[in-house]
Image 1 (cartoon, helix red, strand yellow):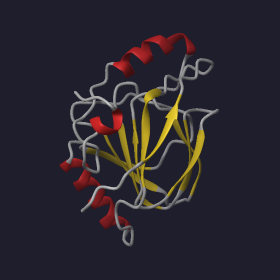
Image 2: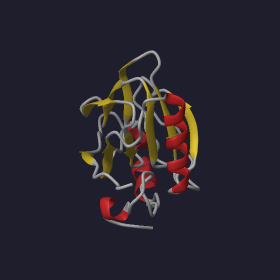
Image 3: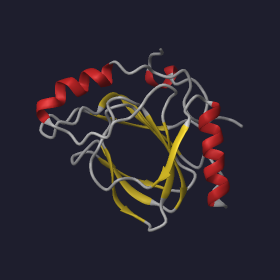
Image 4: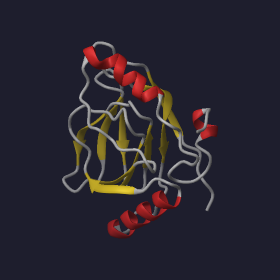
Length: 172
């Protein structure tokens, strides 16, 4: 299987809302998995993520409130339904997510669901050894959140395969 080139999005920190975001780009891979059967697609995402060092952690929807993880990078594999997500906070970008898509969110990137099908569901995964905390943003805590984001190790591979260092410009 050839590894597709991802779309990339960049987001500056949002000082007003206390969102660190990241200097690293969000990676968007379209139609990575055949989505003709949701359960098969979910299983395929879990196997692929695990194979590349991103153990699957859950199957769920995307929260409808702005949040981020300063203690983990995150992979999201859409296996059922579609959603309109907002990345980067209230002044960020809107992005449609479809079955078969994968998002790779660097630590600190704010994300939320604006609209979603009732059956929308994803596989979520984090690099081995990283554990997410759900954070909502606090301007008084922004410096500490930015420091945690800056100290997050970059995994060797993307969750779909291939070098993450080549896409994020550094390695661990």
